[in-house]
Each structure stands twice: as C-alpha cells, then as structure tokens.
Length: 457
Image 1 (spheres, rainbow, N blue to C red):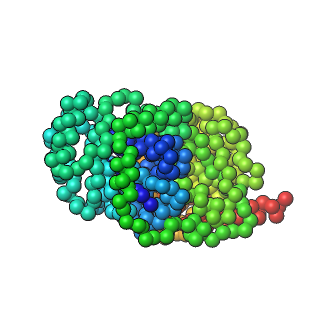
Image 2 (cartoon, one colour; image 1 turned 135 degrees about the vertical axis):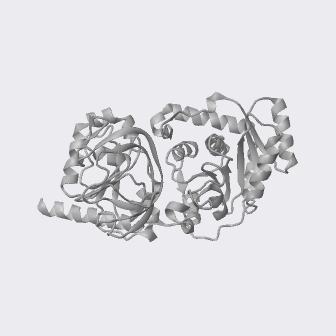
C-alpha cells in the first residue's frame, strides 16, 4: 500500500487543511484514497470521509496497542491505491510522560511510512532550515520525505523558504498561499463536525482540494508514498475478533449531527458479532427501530443540540422504556449526557439521576481504567485504556456502581460513570478494536433480551 503521513512541528500548522485537501485532490485525480487520523480525534475523520468517500479511521497505539496499528491500517486501506494519514499535534507529541507513545512519529514508524512535513511559514524565513534540521535529526528513524510550506505571503517569501529547505536537503512538494477560505469553523473542542457543518463542510473540502491541486505536486506526493516497503501483517478482520450470535438482535446506534464521535470498527464488530445494526438520529427519529434490543449512544456535541434533543419527547420516552426494561445500553460522553435528567437546564432522558452542564474547564487525556463491577460490556477487573475529551460535567460523576475506576494525576483513585441495570454510561471513550470481547458480551446480552421479550409476547 502506497502511504504517507502528514505531520507538522505543532498544532495549528495546517495539517488538516493539507491532509484533507490532499485526500480530495488525489481522489479527484482518480486515486482510491484511504483516510486515517493519528490519535483519538473524531472530528477530522469526518472531513476525511467527505474528501475520500470512505470512512475516516483512527490509528491510536495508546488505545488499541501498537501491535494492532498496522493490521487496522491494512484493513482500512483494502481496495485503495494510496493511504494518507493525518498526524496529531507536533510530530513527536504523544501521551504525556512517555517517550512519544501514540505520537505521529510513533505511527509513522509502525507503518514504515514517510512524512510529508507541513510548516506554517508565517514569521520566518531562513530559520526554517534550523527547524527542519532539528526535526529531521531528532529521530533519524523517522523519514522526512518532503515539505509543504503553508501560509506563504509572497513570491519573495517563497523564494527564501525554498532556499532554506534546500540548505538541509529537503524537497518542497507544495506551497500554499495565505487564504482565509481554507479555514474550517471551530468551537470549544476543535472544528465543527462535518455532519453539523453540512453543505458548508462540502464547500470547505472543495476549497482545500482545489488549493492542494493547484499548489502541491501530486506526482511527487505519489512518488514519495510509493517508496515504502510492504507491510508484512494480515489485515484486521472483525469476524475473527468476536463470536457471532445467531438471533440477529437489533442494535440501534445513535447518529446524525449530535452523535458523531464513533469508530468505524465499532459498527463492523457489532455486525460481525451477529447484530442487525440500525442507525437512529435522535434529532429526527421519533422512535427506536422496531425490535430494538440494544442501544449504543456514542459521543458528540449534544450540548449544541440540547433544545432539539429535548423536543423529541417520543424518542426520549422510548430510550427510557428500553433502559428500564434492562436492555443493554452503551453510552459514552455525549451519550452519557443524553441519558442524564437535564443538560444545561434542558430536559434529557432521565435514565440517570444526574444533571449535565457546560464548564470552562477542558477535561482531556488518556485513562488506564479498570471495571469495578460486572456490566453488559465487561466483567469486574477488566482493564482498558480510554480517552476523555469534554468541557461538560455531571452533577453525580459516579453512580453507586461506577462504570470505571483509575488513578488520577495525584495517584488518588477516581470513580466515574454509571452501571445501572443494563446501562453502562461513562465519559470515557473506548476503541472497540482494543476490547472485542466487550462487543461479544454486549451483543449476547442483546440477544438474551430479544429472546426474553419474544418469549413474553
């Protein structure tokens, strides 16, 4: 698989602009492009999906283990001509207090992929040579294969920057001028999701595609991506990760503009485990799909749609009835808020005896968690690494049976989330590929619920 990683010295350099534009430009030129994002980001993959027409996927060694990264990459790249992997933060920025675990450089090495280095050139000229020299020499096992200069102010500026790149022997593969049209809308957790931005998101992707096609040497990019060794790993196969049930229980998965924070592998694993997966949009659908015996509520931005979610009283009542029946319900972050009594004073489902609200504080980071109680997802004692990313809080952070426990930065134990009947609700995002047994357990619980309901009819 021809492949490359788009990286940068720091956040805000233009990685998403270049990566998304490159994906779209290559697709328009006839390539079948596989899109990836390093880390637990859910927003950029939405734009990658618009650019390529394929699901945007994440590669996160911290969440799934480094041994799974190449096989997940091979799975997501199947049937494509080239893969473009957008990095996270700066090239060597990974999990805090580690030597770059989970960083863009880490993933580039796991994939034996060259790096296309994006530099925001505002405010610098020949100093660029020192910057490039430092990044290239910091870890020689990471191959910087070329540079894209972003935010270039003039032809003179470009001339000086090209000279700086030549000093350190790095080829310039593209030069993007300063242009406000390339900016994507942002808010408290980053970009506005592609699903929420609607037609404007399509227009934004079109704009960056045109810019990259006009200012980046696509032929040179293809040559860079082609100069890679073969990956001697089998592709990840969801059917090999789970044990399928025979009853095809209906599992509703929330989607639409309010619930966009999910992994493509989650639905693939649910289906491989025998579930009949049906998408439900809590902003539009007034009832759960017929025969629903399990519900997945992923993360997203329910706080941006609280009034509309609350106004859909029919679906809220159906969710409450399902939860009170003991059916399996798996809720993460935004899904947790939807199950609360209220969100910023607006009524939600009321499955949990807690209220959600926005705060000025960002809660962010990986968590090495353990399940303190049996649930529809895990047996007590199960360990997993998840990720928190929210600016909201819950008035009752942990129920009588918390969903997870971990040690905080001060090494004191933290209890978080709620296990209530068949409900498992938590702020913690998890990657199902790291714990396929949880999917088997969840779908089996859905099948049991389905059989129990049919037996009482």
